[in-house]
Length: 272
Ligand code: SF4
Image 1 (tube, rainbow, N blue to C red):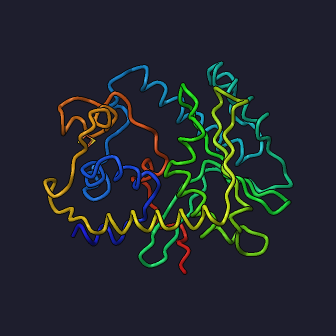
Image 2: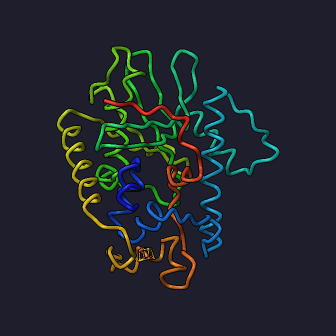
């Protein structure tokens, strides 16, 4: 049963990171399908920050979808208005280019099944694509951390491998792809990560190796898998109530994970 679930699973960056963090957490979320709502976060301030982040993502999606701000300033906070103004200054919408907010992409290449949901894909007339990812943490992420993150690995690789329908020539070269992390709290401190062929091949090896490793594990019982020994990982894990009888202090927002309750059947999987 568990091996069938694994064979059917489309791996997201969150899934790979979850496995990296704690095999038990991976089992609970992706094999057992236990989904914990955000309001299990213990710390009220952290819960508020998470809600702010979710709202910003939703407002940004509407902006690029409609091409203008459609939400009344009377119903959103001063801070959110400022964030939106910074967003529209940083990456203004225009009619010449193509903007795809909250865009989902899947790859089905036999053993390699991947998926991602991008905050924004921006296809320019010059035949390039920029992936934008909005961060709303109180501190800005360091570029070296972002370079190594599985989100960076999966986002660029998947778009290059499976996003050819949007490329002028029918496929992307790694050099055509840029990933930009941007936080409205730090509008002048965007993190720009370019891509190249060498990195693409390295990412492919890494992703395949991780998925192959996961497929070797028996997920039949909780005792079959390794629970993390890092206490810090548990503090920020939604399954802390089961493992330790305490709510999590904070749960990292993960776009794909929010979609565990969504129907992905309407998304076309690219096969090779
Ligand atoms: S609380 Fe800790 S041990 Fe339990 S699933 Fe989460 S990370 Fe793993």
